[in-house]
Amino acid sequence: MIEAGDTGSVERLRRIEAVTDAALSRLDVDELLDELLGRVRDLLRVDTAAILLVDPHAGQLVATASRGLEEELRQGFRLPVGHGFTGRVARDKQPVVIERLERADAVSPVLWHKGIRSLVGVPMLAGKDLVGVLHVGTRAVRRFTPDDVHLLQLVADRAALACQARLSSIDRAAALALQRSLLPARLPNVPGVDTAARYVPGHQAGIGGDWYDVFALPSGWLGLVVGDVSGHGLAAAVVMGRLRSALRAYTLECDDPADALTRLDRKVHHFEAGNLATVLYVMVSPERDRLHVSLAGHLPPMLVRPGCPADLLTLPVDPPLGVGRVRRRRTTVVDFPPEAVLVCYTDGLVERRDELIDIGLERLRAIIRPASAEEVCVSVMSTLGVEQPEDDIALLSLRRHSSAG
Image 1 (tube, rainbow, N blue to C red):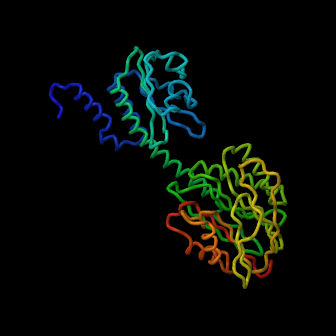
Image 2 (cartoon, rainbow, N blue to C red):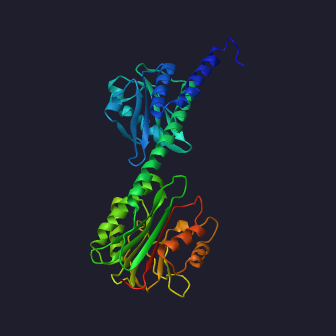
């Protein structure tokens, strides 16, 4: 119970109530940030309050909301994580208090030119993830108290959760739109074969780096691709899109799958450093009787011939894209008889937690039977598909007709 004379406790309670007010939850994110900054300025009696959110791809903090010194917003101010006062808060994920600001610490010229001399900043965290930094400042030199820092951290925590929820929603929507634009809405109708495919997102991100592709080449050959970029969410989907487009371009210049994947590997090393991807690329001959296959760290496809059980093709598997310099990638030629079915997939289809992948591969092998490409996909997904897979699933089947024409 708070005693009537304990004005300090009453003031602390008033402050906490002001920034945890349930009515704030009815505001959209932009309104919430603006209102929180306004209340912080009043409660702490500071001249400026600002929020900078992390751009994880650029490794920078971006001025997003401000009360008092809105010039940072108008100038589109960006700051590398680790630089200056705010950058140190982001780097260390700990509050930083500066009683007398030096010009070198300010980094933002707006803070210095407007006469800000005392600052306190706290990290905006959602779990262990850094969302941004909240800082306040005064023109008069001032010593901020532990209570001031605690109040600011409460505000930062509330703002972080709201921003993280919005960013996650934007990321999911953008990644979903991107992947829908990149996965073929309709597979090409080409003579001699029929094709079918499935894609099921895994994880709560709802999107990832798995993809499939089918395209007819000017030479009469048919290209099939199944790939898997490491990671999930928008970042993986963006890399996937770039790799898909680049590989399509290389296939117009290469008549050997290994050559195309070698070029794609160089692109990953130069432009996508730090990313890994596995890719299966198959070229089907114009007569549809031969498959030229190259594997970059990817699981081999399965082939079922009429009257025979399905086989996991015994093929050389070269390193994934992005792991380091590969001396030579290889292409293997496989016969593709009439009525045979080729099944390509990503590891999400066969891999299960706490289970050897060989068990999943054998489970898939036992399911596949000679049938139309669509029937094969239906059979595989109805047996192996799960309501919420642990990983993304891409599945592509190709059946050769009884005659190539």
